[in-house]
Amino acid sequence: MSGPVPPLPHHPTAVVGAGLGGLTLARVLYAHGVEAAVFDLDPSPAARTQGGMLDIHDDTGQEALRAAGLHEAFLARVHVGGQATRVLDRHAAVHWSHADDGTGGRPEIDRGELRSLLLEALPEGMIRWGAKVTGARARAGGRHEVTLADGTAFTTDLLVGADGAWSRVRPLVSDAVPAYTGMSFIEADLHDAGTRHPASAEVVGDGMLFALGAGRGFLAHREPDGSLHVYAAVRAPEEWLDGLGLTDAEGAADAVLKEFDGWHESLRALVADADGPLIPRRVHALPVGHRWLRTPGVTLLGDAAHLMSPFAGEGANLALIDGADLALALLAHPGDTETALSAYEERMFPRAEHSATDSALMGGTLFQPDAPERLSAMFAGHEPRAEQPRAARP
Image (tube, helix red, strand yellow):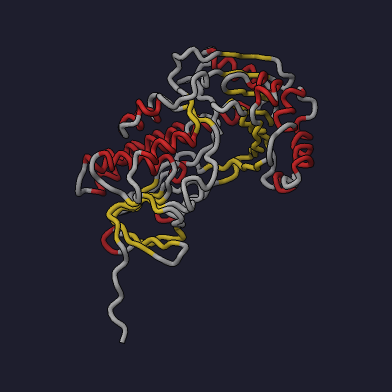
């Protein structure tokens, strides 16, 4: 006869996703003597590149890093000069140029560097790498059972979905799914730009470039290693990227550049001269104002909670502050998880709705025929807005 079935492993707090938000949550808790189990589908922290530069805002992302005890270490890793901004039109005429004088409140850092900073502040073994969550279901008493791709499972008192746009935890609280926004990106890199691509390095400048026109544009930034990270943005049907043949590098560049006929050659070169393959990215978003009813024992943060377009540069900052706020709420209400989750969600929902609204408005502004003039006016403070626009960071 078979013996009794052993109980599943149990974790008081389980965080699905080792991105910026999940790591910030884990770090703030750990700094106060509370451990969370973090599960991530990647086999290791170095399994894939983490994207380009981020501008970390003083009122959100930097506040989170202060709560995590990592603000000084963050400042030591920022990209000096990275807050410079240029706005061009399709003919490469400059409409706005602002150097980084060191007084800005949104210092730039490489996303991978920021993630490494958070990872280094957590103990060995806290993150379970190669642990892909395939599903979760509610159990009695507010607990949840989580299943992994390897067939194992565990239970938890508090399940936090920090697992991004296509969250496996979100269905526990919401039926919402991300929808295509109408914009597609083609991502490219130009390495050692000062030596190998001097004309491109000059047109991008020391920080962020917006080169904008009707329904399309180039968004690019210089990285600390001297490379250029480029996004060619096109308003197009969702299936447009499927027809580009991106496995053929030369043919893919030609297909993309057909969308930029008549644009200045210095801008077209940002794709034409790319090193390595072009990477397709469709821009998706959850509905503006996405929220859910309080569901016992589970919540979401970051893109899992409020995926939005990148055109206001808010996504990473919101993930960071979400993680810190959730941790602080849990610490403020020990033994009363539901009160903590209610307090966290009451802060997170309106903040996310405000940012998602701003992101959608900026997405509409950036690709209008008069976008260079309008964006330059916003940066100069001439456009009547509640606050200055964030530089977009796809």
